[in-house]
Image 1: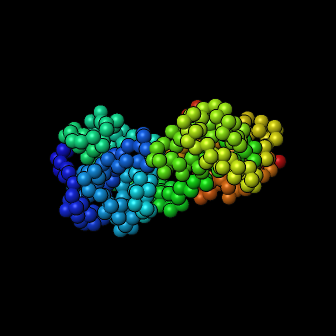
Image 2: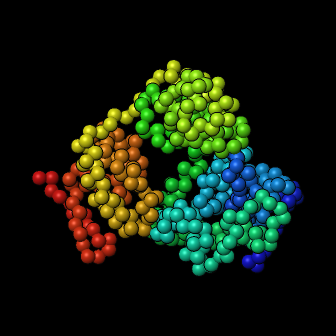
Image 3: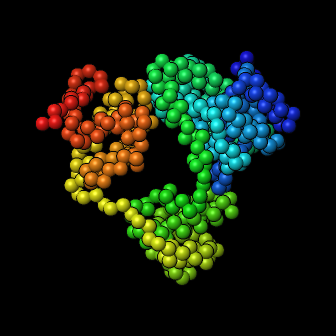
Length: 395
């Protein structure tokens, strides 16, 4: 196949050719180009599909790519993507489908020793030794006509997904990590991962940790209002009210238009336009039950967790490097600190920490528990990974 070969699809007959090729191949490579800088919902500008030896570039401004969404939801078709989350969210938001057979090559690379955040171009080069042309990643994909250079760049985004997936699966099988990788990708096939409840929007507002339980109840209501308002007007959330302003609204809980206008950061036009809706949301929050907040850990627990986090990080990194798994796929620094705080506060619930579930527990979880309990020491050595665990006697 020529490196520039692709089929531009702009009608239903072309889509029928795509689905026929996909059914025959049993898998597709998939990518999308979209824009959402000025909208709440992503504007789909292009859909690229690799099926067998064919590369299809579908123009959603000319034809509805709903049949591609049906392929994504078809359990008999494996869907290969790179950094799959946003592409799948787009199809779910637009068509309501839930993916059923996904293989994310970026995530798989993290389990195969390549790192968990490689760009597509770097992953192509690392696995296949092919250097891709650059220069179109920030192009306006909704502008027409598309140039030959844009179309080639778009086609390359799916052209090598099959070969990368095959290479990674072999590496993972040889390393005994294929099951781990598939287990991680199951989250992409969970319907709950795509459920966007406006009442949960407050959980994504930065700075909420400074609020009291009563103020959090207010935040929940005004964040839900903002989410619905942004969706209704199809504009970014921050264009309605920015996060720091939401926090201030929750903290001060204004009950009159005059008090609302005094909130720093609230656009005067938005204050005038949405005064009644914001005040009503504040009132709902004030009347509702206060949100329970976690009890602050003692100073002693915080100090112990802080002192131990560095040692724990060394053990986690050494174990991940030995296993050839990207550390960021296994556990984050904040997750380690939360686990240590719960341990030292005497409030550990193992079911609430993914680090203590399944393969993560085998790889690093038990080691963290052992280190925190004084059953494991760490010794510096002069060879990779430069630290060594030393079991200690109970006495």
